[in-house]
Image 1 (cartoon, one colour):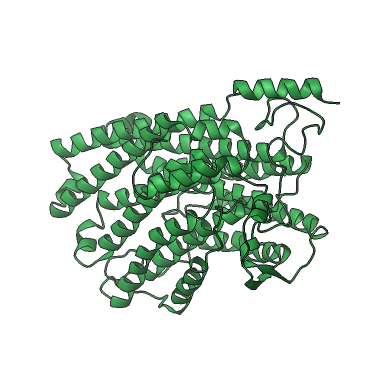
Image 2 (image 1 turned 90 degrees about the vertical axis):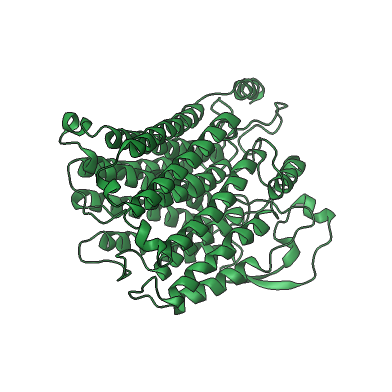
Length: 521
């Protein structure tokens, strides 16, 4: 990625200056790395072949299979959702196309686009993170990864058939009805079963189930850590087994909760003055994402920067934020209520807090641009969400394309950037690193997304001033839709580039794999 100034340059210098020094670090939720490191494990010990990231031969590390599989399924759903979005943009520009596509008109494709983005592209990298934490190395890990991803995708395909058939419930992002509703709950159950199976397999290898005493400075017991002084301050930490089973216990509730949440009799609290979400609800959903973002470095076992220690600020602040959410008003609340406005405004602390925390870790060089993009999009998302929630702004923008801009700011901006970081750190796949570290599709996506969002926001502001534009449009609106279509096409091209690149075999992989085969037993 090109160099940037300020935080970007400092983060980039830290990444590039330490990429070659990455130690083999124990996983925070396990007694050691959940998979062999690149060039270790499955490669013959006496081989003089250079370490290979996922060689093209049969000598593959399970971490490579995990990284490749999750990336391909995730990027496949991103490309599919973008193609559906491209069709929707064309139908807005040329409504007469709906007649040719009937009955598969705009209203049938919209839930497909929404849910393929959310449950496909946005969710699968998180599924990969969970698999990265729980799976025990071996052939079973590869099979179980494929089973989980295939079951998840099959549920989404079943949902696609339902949505195109008119089976949407009308609950935004909870359009699971009939067989699709059951199918997705079964996919969630399959994921839980795989995680629980591997958690019990790991149980025999753990030293303790409860708590252990450790030094603040020894979170990563790596060779490099021995070269720097350690803190003499000790803390009581939950053991990896306890953390893992706590996750399992919480995740057990998810299939049932999703099934009933998608039902027609359950609705979240609403803002009585706008019909939208309350400030506390928005705060809570965003806080859940922040917990994942903060835990990500530990879940993928990133080493700390030389001289860096665990943050004594990040997690206490997040715990305090959870306390605020727990004690807030979870009933119906208006955007005119001061407590709703203040609670939502607390999210302004999130981008600088994450930036401070992320700088302490050694990231892959290919992730630098995505990390900076995630922080920029996150800051814009918080500002946009808070401003559009305020009285006056909410009334003007709530039924316009400005809210479409906000959802794209979240998914195409923040979530996409963070997901790329997830995928880059699931394992040591050189294919994934080469694909997601390429400059051209990165900038194509970022610039097209920025143009796409800016157009929708400007269009929404115009629609708020002249509500007739929402239904009627005009030459200016058509021009906006045309440029938006072109921006969406650019984003689709970028997603297809990443998908196809994730299947390519690099020459270095082929040579390393051939060398390993020649020198193996």
